[in-house]
Every structure is written in C-alpha cells, then in structure tokens.
Length: 349
Image (tube, rainbow, N blue to C red; front, top):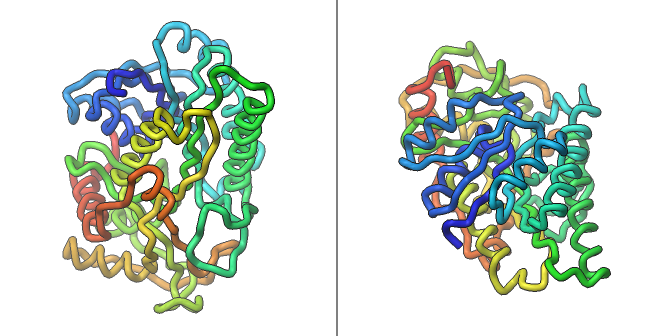
C-alpha cells in the first residue's frame, strides 16, 4: 500500500537504514525514531541522497512513552518496523540488565503506544539466536526455542510477548487485531551498492565481516578465528550469511503480507530470513581475498564459549508465504562490504 507511513525504530542503524532505503524506493512515507546510542544521524542524509526522497526523524528512545505518544499523535503512522535494540551477544552476557531494559521493556512501551494509537501492524526484527539446540543444522521455524545468552533471550521474550498480544486479541474478539511478523535473521552482511551506507560498528567489531574488512584495509592488524577443530568441512564455524539488502527486502514482503489475505484476521507468525546455505569462517576469508585481491591476516585461536559448530536457515516458509528469497551470493556480499569500507575507511565521520 504505497504512500502509507511506516514508523522505523532504530532507523539510523545498519539494518534500519537499509530498510528505510527500500521503503522510500517502494513509495512509502518513512518516520524514523532512534536515540542514536549506537549509531549516527549521517546515514539518514545519505539514504535521502540515494533515494532522492525525504523522511521525518525524531531523536527519541522507545522507552519514552510520552515521546512515542506524541509521534503517533503527530504522524499518520499505519505500521511499524521495529529494529531498535542492543545486539551484541558478548556485551549482553556482561550487561544483561541493559539488554532486558532496552530490548524487552522498550518493546513493551512501543506496543503500548501502538495499541493506544490503534496501529497494530508490526514487523519485528528477531534473530536466529531464539532457537534452542537441535539435532539438525538447518533451522525450521517450528524448531524448539531456547536462547542461550541474554541477547537471544531478550529477542525470545519479545516474541512471546507479541504472541500473547495477538492471542489476547483472538480471545477478546478485537475489531482491529494485531498483525505481527517475527523475522528471524541469520547473519546480515554487505552494504548498499552505492557504498553510501553500510555497517559502522563502534570500536572493535563484534561481527566477522566488518572485522575482516577492517583487517584487509589495515585498520586492524589481525583476525582471530575462534577454533578450527569443529566437526565442519574445514574445522571452522559455519553460518548462514545474508546480504543486508536481501534481508530488508524481506521486511517489505512481510509488511505487504500483513496487509493481505493471510493476516486478514490478525495473527503473529515467525519467518526465517537466510540464504539456506552455510559458509565457514575460512570460506569468508578466502572469498574476501579472491574478490578484493587483499590479504586477510588471521590466526587460529581457541573456541569461543557458546558457539555452535554449524547452523543455517531453512527459508522455505518465507518463500512460500511472503514470496521472498535471497538473491545475492557471497561474492556480492563481499564486493559491497569492500566498496563501503574503501569509501568510508573510518565509517560515518
């Protein structure tokens, strides 16, 4: 429903900013809410440059009910894409209360403000970390849930809250029921092909791809590979990496689905967003070297506590019900990461 106004929480962040590009390109109006705690406002200027369109920005925290209420009063918001939250697994183990307060409490305040404004369409940024241990390495949406760190548990708690909200509507016979898509990401990497927006971590990157690219450009000296004795094809951990542009296109498809026949009576449903194949850490390094022609210095270190040997997505449900699948391959992901890194060696400055 082009022309509709979408509220994007965390819209200055890595995934949120790419989502704004796709929304504006598809003809939606965009309102961004972000407290800038882990991002900068510069991506908004650049995404307006990419799209030739403008958006509305509010510097506010999703835990601030008064601020959210004022935004819903002022803007004709029809649906919400919710990206705002803390997202580093290691940090969540050191600072669990911050994660529960930001992610869980923040979402509860957002949901209250949405309900009061009668805006009940929500696309939620969840994570593959909600899954528990499984005998299969390819994760399907109905696998057991059981996150093993505070970050994952915060996402799982939010999923449960949103499922409860949707179920309550069914019990109460709500006239305008909640329509919620829970999108479980695997490992987003890459950047917009323009090189104008990309991943800009504060300090030392927590994720593999930005670390690799910063080693390749000389910003960091060496990559530590956590373990080479896993029962995988080359001994290093295997994950499902997905191009960030493919990922956010999945959000557009989910938004369209919420407004279609499938969610006509409301509901809350989870979808995996991944490529459906796994790449090892050494696959990433070798592909990076082949695509860029740059050497990536690395050393093998001990395993990291809590890391699984291998897992990747089964994304068939998203294809079947949302009409979405990943289009870009690992070479594309690497090329776009390197383009962003070369054009922005210090990130957004």
